[in-house]
Amino acid sequence: MTDNKKSRSRRIKWGRVLDHTVLIAGSLFMLIPLLVVLQTTTTTDVATIKFGPQLAVGDQFFPNLMKAMFKASGFSGQNTGTSMLINSMILGLGFALGKIVIGMMAAYALVYFRLRFATLAFWLIFTTLLLPLEVRILPSYEVAQKLGLLNTYTGLIVPLIASATATFFFRQYFRSVPEELVEAARIDGAGPVKFFVDILVPLSRTMIAAMFIIMFVYGWNQYLWPTMITTEEGMYTLVRGIKQITQDLEGTNIPEYGRANMLALIAILPPVAVVIFFQSWFVKGLTESDK
Amino acid sequence: MKRAGFTSRWLPILLLVPQLAIIAVFFYWPAIYAVQSSFYLQDPFGFGSTFVGMANYTDLIGNAEYLKIATFTLIFTLLVTFFSLTLALLLAVKADNVIRGAKTYRTLLMWVYAVAPPVAGFIGLIMFNQSWGPLTDLARSIGWEFRLGVNFNDTATAMVIVSVWKQVPVNFIFFLSGLQSIPRSVREAALIDNRSATRRFWDVTFPLLAPTGFFLLIINITYALFDTFGIVDTLVKGEPGNNPMTLVYKVYVDGFRGNDLGGSSAQSVVLMVLVLALTIFQFRLVERRIHYT
Image 1 (cartoon, rainbow over the protein chains, first blue to last red):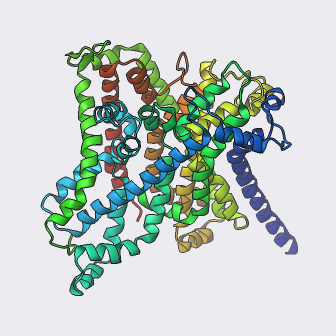
Image 2 (image 1 turned 90 degrees about the vertical axis):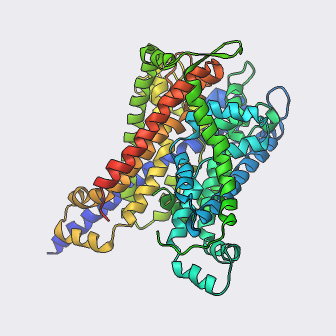
Image 3 (image 1 turned 180 degrees about the horizontal axis):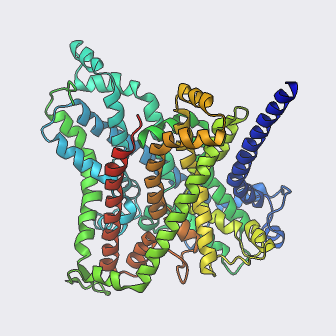
């Protein structure tokens, strides 16, 4: 009997070992590329070209960081890491804020008011979920050009807001808020504005935070639209500038791996940090918004 | 919907105006414009355009290059969807099993969600660097001379690997949350009925995850079709040449580089129809048939 017990406990242990092995392998699959990039930001370009990524950490991190932040590639000398970082921040924050404000307003109107054309408005808004920007990219560019929005922050942010993801999300959420709340508020004499500002918004705090994280990451990571709309180097975001960074690697001079990889790292860090720090909100928002 | 609403007349309109204005200008106008210009042939020097009817569409069907790209896109989509779903499912099941280190694993397996596709492509360039890339070295050690950007199949392989790397986290998050929402009572009942973990997975867990799986299937197909643009663009270094490309990339190359607005618009319309079909498929078939709640 003791034998039997022993063998069972051993079998369970092996199962655990297998679980952990698979998970560690998966984690390494995810992590190793980042470590390679990280290592090359700490060595000189010559060392990288000669030996490739090594196991040892070099001492060139700060010189590379300086180069990445303050040196510009291209003709105008305006697309330094600093300027691209600022533009990325403006895009990420502006997009998230715009999307949430506009989405909440529209969702509030759709859920809490009796509107004659509510169904029409609903369909007009939710059809936008069906067609991603990528399939209508060229006509969108033409429209933005006609409106004189090339190389402006408005042109960068507003067309990206033209889809109903946040509206849909908040509509779902508002509909799950107990109805008694509105009735109570009305009996107490609260008007629609007061109800929205004093009750609904504070109640949706977690949802707003979750949506903000998702939208910030989404906006920060935009590539195709910024590539088309910004031609001036001073307007580049980090993600949009990545193409120029790769072209630098093809140049006739010594490829600047240290600077390029550092810029890639700077492009990765803010959204990843946000996702890791606010993990539970982010997961909640993601799994509840898309269903 | 029996929700007791407010009865103000102008406030809801005021609230809806910003949303409706933005989608009118930046969604409906471009979409209609795309459909319209798909029937016209643009003068290459910018002197107006001529109505050509369906010519832009018939050109597509007869175009060997377009068909080749469509075939590649199909294979690419299948591979990316298959590998990112199965890998993520495996990892999610294991992550759901363990207790020690669960949170660390979860973080390590999902942070890549926040990496932008072109940055993922850039990391791919580093990993597959011709002279010292770790993955190139790995391929060389098994006698595979990997040449990114030169050899068609090698470039395609790199695209698939990078795209899967970027997509696994999303699927992982959804599968894990799907697994964790399976009630304890169901798990315990299954545990009593069946001692084999493998059988328990296929008979109980897998069917319960099916709705999540089908939802993710559509998400992954859309991802492979559209969101991989940045990966493709950086991996081919912006020079399509003889390299593999996806349909969305072709829309961009023809329209933005080749100035063929009509042809590019026709391709856009084809893609719009494809996405619409996918979405209708998702809503109709999947939602109706697979429903366990």
